[in-house]
Image (cartoon, rainbow, N blue to C red; front, side):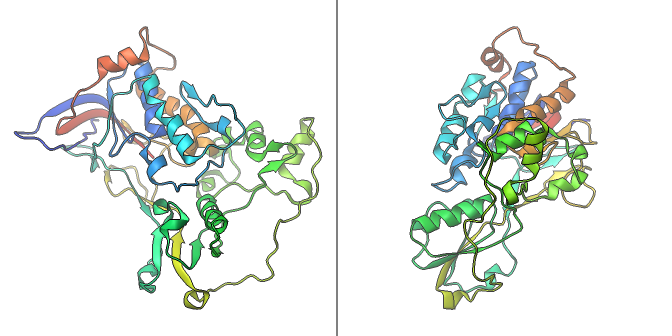
Length: 390
């Protein structure tokens, strides 16, 4: 079944239509990883990106952003972090620089500034990839004197007016933004969500290094405790109480030589646990909503939804022939939404698409990419396969 795609661009005269085998919608790390395997296997394709490749790392992260996963996690097909600090945490600008070096290594047929607006199974159509920031429906009823913005729009403390700040959401974004504001001398109120806490280091190693060695990032969602419900988890939870339990049990069972750990002690224990905040009395002049995103799949006009919201798939492969998803959290494993797990998922999907399981090129990837490059994007594209990447 063909899945037509449309990429409208300003032009004079009647629209033209070009046929390509695969259209990859999205030019972030997942889309580029998908293209790497398609280039390797000699598959005619195009990667359509509304902005510029990987632009969200620069455009939707605040100035003081850093990774929460160690740098050695940063691995894409044919490309891995090779800097001097594998156990460190790259800043936003360092991630942007690292990711910018990826495409030149294999020359993907990338078309930037090409926004697509819908996906249909037949007829002329196109693509758009949208993620809607979550803001409570009652937020507009708050005083207009209070500045409100989503974490995707936060850049630095100087962006906000003088006064106290309420940060809503205590996941990775909310916690880092609250820290950023606190270090800038701002008084911050942090509204806690259900994101669990985890120790940064335990018994001589970063906790995520332990988790990787334990195989948690490689465990498929079907084999994970709780099954598919794991996709609804905000983040992982590993207790450090009494010296840590989950990790310690694995260390002991495998005879790993690791230094002992002291009993867990919280770095701060609040005197009270407030459940409400009078914004005016507290002098709050700004609110940063850091409660995530709500995916919008209304643009996907294909029978891959069961009414619960997300698309139904098995490791990115849907029941609609030729339609695939990549880059989603828990697409297959805990690592699917991270740099660490993208390559395996991309290889699985492209292998399913092409029926190939190994390298098939006799010329360089860059030379092949130039050979299959589609040239200017026409007003309409038709493709036998479409990969939608987050």
